[in-house]
Amino acid sequence: PRKDSSIEATSKGKRGGKREHLSEAEKRRNHIQSEQKRRNQIKYGFDTLTELVPELRGGGYSKSAVLQHAAVYVENLVGGNAALRNILKSL
Image (tube, rainbow, N blue to C red; front, side):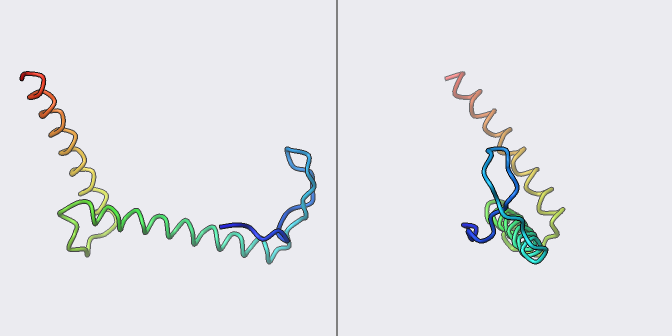
């Protein structure tokens, strides 16, 4: 999302431009928005994993269980791909 131009800062940055100082309320609002975005990205990641890993499609798993099942699933895919490569090499 684009930042509001009224929220730009005033001290010289690394590029030498002037920026206005943020008020405490603006800093808090930015922090809250950043944290919400971070949480939404994590939720999206877990939702994506539950869609991609067949064992997880029913839902109801804890985050640690989702990660464990996803790791096993990926390990199995990697192993299966290696086996298929070996078969292709032998042909």
